Image (cartoon, rainbow over all chains, first blue to last red; front, side, top):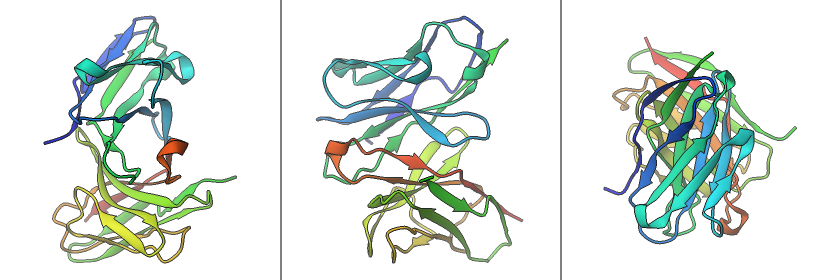
Amino acid sequence: AQSVSQHNHHVILSEAASLELGCNYSYGGTVNLFWYVQYPGQHLQLLLKYFSGDPLVKGIKGFEAEFIKSKFSFNLRKPSVQWSDTAEYFCAVSPPWGNTGKLIFGQGTTLQVKP
Amino acid sequence: DGGITQSPKYLFRKEGQNVTLSCEQNLNHDAMYWYRQDPGQGLRLIYYSQIVNDFQKGDIAEGYSVSREKKESFPLTVTSAQKNPTAFYLCASSTRSRSSNYGYTFGSGTRLTVV
């Protein structure tokens, strides 16, 4: 079945460590890609998105993601995490068919940053 | 300020009861969505609506119903047919056009518990 997969369900890091969260999707064709973050007790909010152009996308709070079409991947990275990055992270894909605007989400990754 | 309002924040349902979750937006967005969030499963699409008086089933529509009588409102009814309704429910809205990058805005969610 077509889907979005996040490899890591729970990641624990110390402050200043580097972060990479994996995301793979199985849709062919042109897709739009997103990373959302949900801080404890807060709304889901957009970190970054990719539609076209430079496959290295920069988002808010120092996050970036790289789209590798040949690998169907859109991994999220941050060179040095902070305690305030503790949150749940969701990768999402807007499939290529139709114009529905619906997003398909991955299972989510809980990031815990230790001070 | 523009945004999405979900109410109530917490809802308790007895076995066999139907309950309705409210979602209102003042963003003038055409499209609205209902997602269900469960630990380890990410967000799964229940129903979505691209325009008033029209809606489509998502991946897990069984046991749920919706209506879209007004652009601003997209209430979700969790019926007694839904076998495992305890979850966190998120409403979202977006612009409809792919060219406008599907800016999703999420509500703060309703946590439904069956008692």
